[in-house]
Length: 306
Image (cartoon, rainbow, N blue to C red; front, side, top):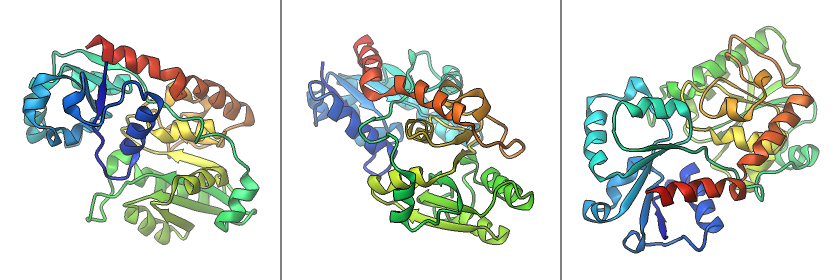
């Protein structure tokens, strides 16, 4: 069996996932969809980059990471229905996404969470990481590495919860919940959060689209990582932070409850606590089961099933 993986080529998470999959499965990898037995539309929104004549002649698995009901308008429904003609099975990373699309298709829906690569994501030294990034030792660093502003508008991408994140930061500052808080931002399209942080009067550091080695140091520098999303497929931050033994809290989205200790899943910003060392260790022990070499057999079985 040969698998072609469609990545969006936008230098973001799906491109990294495609690279990791192909690297871990060289015996399955092909670079041309014409040579594949199975086409994996990992970035489903780019599905029409492959001619329908090719899609019609192959087995096709399409990943739906998550659906935002408020944005799933008539045009998106019509596109889903048309594209469904070329899909043999759907892949989703969590049960919430499964339930969202079950009402849209009669095709098989296979639920398999995504992986992390332990050769990249593992504990590294906090002191050295802060020193290399120019972060002071006495600062309490709160991390958020994503894109959460609607492109070119300055408006919040509400499914990612940037408004909830900023409300939490304001609560932390107003109630003095930690000393010397500083927000460490990564990713791109962060203008909404930056504007809010300025109004709140919180210091921040923004590192936009930095190399992966720098992202690792950013994680290692964190005293707390926050996932404030309303809808998620993963997010990968749950896997990455857990694998690096970084304190993380998350709303109940995506795979959070699969990976994180119950004490780390909360109603942000109404609830707030800093994970204990026991919870951090519990997250780490759980996430090891999602390492790519442990999980790739689940994906291979999924492709073989179609």
